[in-house]
Length: 168
Image 1: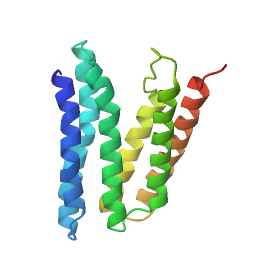
Image 2: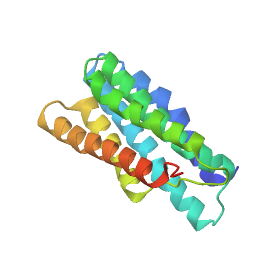
Image 3: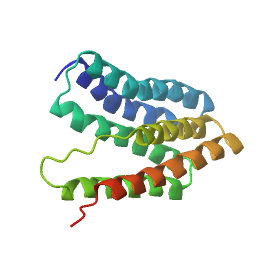
């Protein structure tokens, strides 16, 4: 493991902290949780920059980075569902897409890599923005961010299947 891998791991470790704050009844705790969530979200950007700058990617990092994203997004989403600040169907679409892409990766020919596309990076970013907004806001801002996130979630899911589904 290298520095970038440890930054990625911090995203996983920060997730239960975010969840704990977002499960509290006080809005003040939600804002503190949002700050921690933003730090956790920024690690997704930082770990990639570090890995490219150090020109040292690892197998651990290539596995842990997308997993850390899923843990943060789904964990935070579950906390928001539990407190009534997020509709379960939104997180279900996210979960369905992630399971489908994981399944797609499992049927790819050996040695085939499926790197994150730029739209998929925007998908994760939009989900993080939507989750953060839902933690502390309600109404059209959070709803609008979720609309963008869901469109990108479905679009990138389709895009991966279009490009990587075995064509034999």
